[in-house]
Length: 122
Image (cartoon, rainbow, N blue to C red):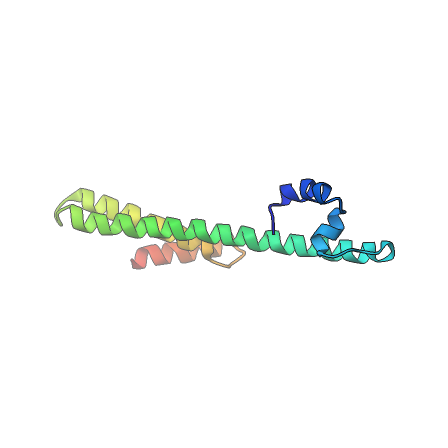
């Protein structure tokens, strides 16, 4: 599926309607409305899935960065150093932030409370 911004220029270049491009076949005039509605729904579904995938990638990167900071904090700084504690807390905050973004609860407060409990457990 090409980027949505390319659909109109692509349909003009191919000399077909946008509806036919999205359907992938020639459309008779009497069936145009049926195909148009289905194409719009398919495009919205595709866009929603792509946004969720990008959101998940960002959350995974934040969590991975947190894990990396924690590992570095434990390996670089001596155990009696306060810098090791500061960096490990910062790493834990990144891990919890990544997890917070992926929680499927609709309530911000519920997600926040679960994140706080996870942070305190770590």
